[in-house]
Each structure stands twice: as C-alpha cells, then as structure tokens.
Length: 474
Ligand code: NAD
Image (cartoon, rainbow, N blue to C red):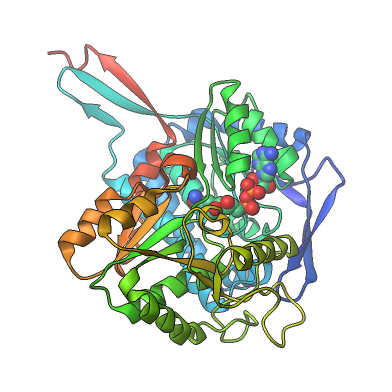
C-alpha cells in the first residue's frame, strides 16, 4: 500500500494542513493501492512562498549548472526505472511494456532533451541594433492529467528548470504516485530548496488555486478543454501567461497508394496504445472510398495483434483509468451504434472479463464527420472510419474539427504526403511511421491549446522576452 500523505514544500516532506484523504485505485483490479492527502489553500500558499523565495537565486543559476542538474535528474530517473514502471502499471493500468517503452522513456527523454537543448540555447541575442534577452518568467504552476503520469510532468519540469523557473506541481489525483517518485528523484539529486514543490489535491482547490494565485506568474496546464478555459479565465484576472495542452480529435489520412495493412495497423495501434487515452491519438481515419472494403478487412485482421487484458501479462491493451472513464467511453460507443455502423467491438467488457475497467477496442464505419463520435474526444479505444473521394476532400474533412493537436498521413508519393501534411491545421503532423523526436515542438492549434512543449520551444514558454535598445553600442 502506498500511503503518501505529505506534500513536498521547500525541500521537505510536510504534513497537509487539511485532513481530506483520497484513495487511489488500480484500474485493473479495482482495489485501493494507496492514499494521498488533498492539499488546502494554506498548503499551496506555503509552496508558492517557497518558490518565490527560491526564485532570485534559482533564476540566476548558470546554463552549465542547469545542464548538470538536468543530467543528474536523468541519471537518477534511470536508477528508479523499475519503480516508475511498476507504479504506472499499478496506478494507470498500463501494460508493463507500455509503462516501460512509452511512459518511462518519455520522462527520461524530456530531462535528457532539455539538457541537450540548453547547450545551444541562447538567453541573449544581438539582433544588430538591439539586444533581446530572455528572462525567467517567474514562478510556474503546473497542472497535469492522469493519462501520461511521467510525460506531462517531466516535460513541464524539465523546461522550467532549464529556464530557471521554480515550480509548484499538482498532478492528477487519479494517478499521483509517479509524481511522488519524481519528487524523490529531485530530493536525491539536490534540486535547490523551493525550486520544486509538490502539492497534491483536487482540481477545484489546488488546481483552481494555482490558476488564480497572485504569486504564480505562469500556469502550464494539460487536461480537458473545459478545465483549460477555467484556467485561462482565472489567469486572465492578473494577465498571467498560460500554456494550455488540451484535447484532440486527430485525423489519419490514408492515401490511395498506402499499404492497406500497414495503415490499418497504424489506425488500430492509435486506439490500442494507452487504451486510446492519448490526446494526440488519431481517432478519425480517412480512407479513400475505393479502399473502404479492403481497409475494413485489414482492421479486422490486425485487431487480434492487440489483445486486451491484465497489464501484468503479455497484453497490449489494459483497462481504462477509472469507472468514470469507462462509463464515458461506453456512452460514446452507444451513441456510435445509433449513428454509424459497428465494425468491431461494442459496449460492455471484453468476453470473460469481470473485474477491471476494460473496454472493447471498437471501430465504427460509415461515419460522417458531423456525427458526435467524429467530433467529440472519446478518450478510449474507439475510432471512426470516414471515406473520401479526393485528396482535397480529405483535407477538408481532416480540418473540419474544433481541435488541431495532431495529424497523420499514410502513403507513398512524397509530394502528396507533404501536400496533405502542410494543409493540416494541427501542431504536429506525422508522415508514415516517422520516429519520435523529443526536440520537436508539441502543442495544438485551435481548441487543442496554446503554446508548445518539448525541447527548445518548451523552454521558451518559461521565459519572458526583454528588448534592450542602445546595446551593443553601435
Ligand atoms: P481534466 O481537465 O479533468 O484534469 C486535468 C488536471 O486539471 C487534473 O490535475 C485535475 O485535477 C485538474 N483540474 C480539475 N479541475 C480543475 C480546475 N477547476 N482548475 C484547475 N485544475 C483543475 O483532464 P483529465 O481528465 O485529467 O485528462 C484528460 C484530458 O486531458 C483529455 O481531454 C486529453 O485530451 C487532455 N490531454 C491533453 C494533452 C496534450 O498535451 N494536449 C495530453 C494529455 C491529455
């Protein structure tokens, strides 16, 4: 049982001033695996004060010192690999291979990449006539969701540290334990007192408190659009900077000359990885009308490559994170059965499963882009097949969404691939099976958010631009 009833403030684990406790549940077993304290505004005030006290010296540390700190964090993170993998498997229900190859690796890559990006990062720029300086934004408040417990926390913290910004982190209360390990890592490597503070708690108290706190200069939020709007509203009261990483309904455009089976495998893997609880997952698959039948057959053929089941066994798809998430996904599957044609999957748990929040990987066909299942983020193992007749029509359908986080294009002809990639209104477009790149910026257009994370663009978020005229003297 993991019982972590303290917050980490000013370099120490301290008792919560409140007495509300939240139980954390393993979604595969539905058993309680630990508890956290839900912090109070008093706890948050203490953390903000600690960060403000740390600011003058932390923001003035040299670039070399910050690179060294980030490298030490990455090295200690590696030492905690087993704990991180076990913890994410328990709290999120992520299959062990995904916990290791995706969740653990993403956190590691963000710290290593930030150190690397910092090497060539310039905080001062002579622009011939004037100088631009990049100052640390101030104290940062970080609010993260449950679906990638080490990815979102690590990218924000690594960028903040690279920029010299002290932080207060509030991780999702559903999956809080990975952040406890990160805190232990920072404590072990000697992150300066007050530069990192962890306050666990609810969104309505600590999340809302962070976004409205006058002592917090910048808020970086990852989560739903509904909460993102509230964060922005609160921050607007004091004109504080915000970065928002929100939802998506990303298209995967399959071109005429694509390998059908490869494209179908990519489509299925998007809803299989992390049980489809991925903001950038492709959940609208655009297929040429002429390919519809063969694509449907290919989906049915490849689906068994992604078995659903116990994350501690050799399965690719684990449970959804909570009963609440399971209920939401079920209601969308019901809606899809009314609106479109069910190709595979459906409501209820997979055959033979009684315990755990498992859902059936579900694919709808004959989907029209106006349907609810094509417009709303489902955040589960559910996708939609939509047909098109021309590349222009595919682009129009792909962009016909309030979101713009990611896009995917599959095919052979480079000119067409680049034409579609360039036309998609999304922050990140992947062509075929391009490899992950942690130096590449990540973020969304439209209601998918504001700002960019990862690598040097991520560091920029934690900086203010200052112009100095008259220097260097001409
Ligand atoms: P959520 O918005 O419910 O919660 C996110 C965080 O905000 C949690 O820590 C929560 O406690 C906190 N919160 C809740 N109410 C708050 C309030 N009033 N003020 C401030 N904070 C508050 O989202 P979720 O269900 O945890 O995560 C799923 C959502 O996150 C999906 O919409 C998904 O697309 C999105 N997401 C986006 C990205 C991205 O990078 N764009 C990445 C992962 C997840």
